[in-house]
Amino acid sequence: MRLNFYIQKHMKKVLIVVIGLLSVPYLFGQKIKYSKSMLHKMNQTEIDIFEPTEGKYTSKRVKKNDYQKIDHQVYSKEDKLEIRYTIIPYEENIPSTQVPHVEFMRVISSIAPNEDDTPVTVHTMPSIELSRNFNADWGSIAYFKPKPSFANYKHCRFLSLYGDERGTIHIFFLFDEPSPTLDDRIYAMRFKKSL
Picture 1 (cartoon, helix red, strand yellow):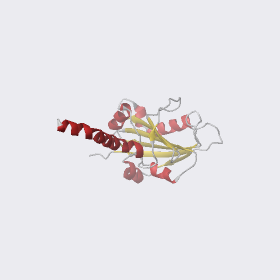
Picture 2 (cartoon, helix red, strand yellow):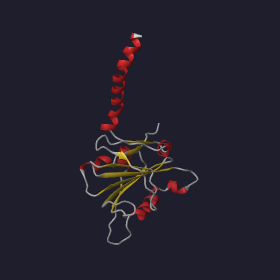
Picture 3 (spheres, helix red, strand yellow):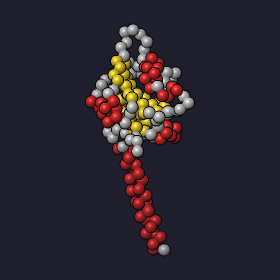
Picture 4 (cartoon, helix red, strand yellow):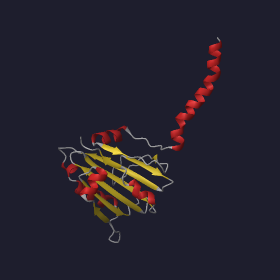
């Protein structure tokens, strides 16, 4: 009887402490949640994702657009940066999953404005940098202003990575003003090392 009274008396305190401890990651950490589809594609394509530890990034609901399918997106009000991810798993009987440079140019022609006075800068990444930083076999970066119907931002840094017989990763970094954190975010995803 006395033990039951003691347990009931202190149970509220214990419950408050437990709820508080479980809330800490949501108050101070990231609020990034992945769909089952996104997690499946990451597993199928053998991808590691590196969530930013600062900047208070949160997942945003992916809005459908006519230009590019997006699997996941996150946003940081602090960094003033939105990051969108598309993963295209390799499929042996679908040739378009095996030609990353063609897919890269298709994406640019879809989401960059088609006006002559809108520049698009493309940089092919050296194989040493690709291997060391991304475990990728091919990769390119493009800089341009996105179509407003794709994203209402002044700038897009588009990173595309390809892993042989794994697939393609597209990462869109959307922002109005460049910030020091932008260069840190470029390493958001990489292919896992082969065993």
